[in-house]
Amino acid sequence: MADVNFSTATTHKLRAEPERGEPPLYELIELIFFAYRDFVADPDHALEAYGFGRAHHRVLHFVDRNPDLTVAELLDILKITKQSLARVLKDLVDQGFILQREGREDRRQRLLTTTAKGKQLAIELATTQSQRIARALSEAGLTGPELAQRFLFAMVDPEGRAEVARLIRGNVTRGDKIRGDKR
Image 1 (cartoon, rainbow, N blue to C red):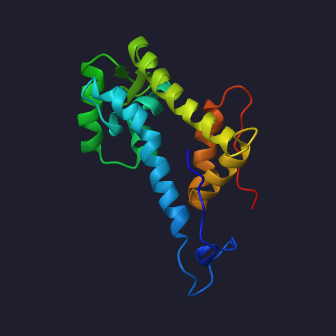
Image 2 (tube, rainbow, N blue to C red; image 1 turned 90 degrees about the vertical axis):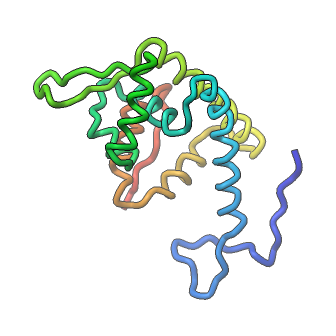
């Protein structure tokens, strides 16, 4: 792996608000694009065998992490249209990865949970991504995920942080925690 070098001409002091006229943080923007590209590449290859794409991965991930998630809650998490979700969800249900059933109190509700097959695929995809994250943390000299978690959490719009923290805290295992917005 080549060392990543940044030019001093575009290095910025990190501030809460950029100063007027200051050039964009191109290196960081591009690193986020490239990191995301490679982060999703491993699951993309595994999903090809099923004829699935990234939308299938996101649905499978959040349904697996949140058993009995409602369709409305999933729409809110993913910020997609009902039409987009319907196609993806149909694929996952038809191929036996997700089970959909009526709500207990409200029969109009649709509750989603992964099947054993769906859970197995979700874990396989999360494992490959976890390995990439662990390798990157190690190469960056970080001893744990806390610093990266705080950075990524700070990237979330302030008005959405409470919901993101609630979702993550409800699913975190092994004592990992995201620190919420302290404002």
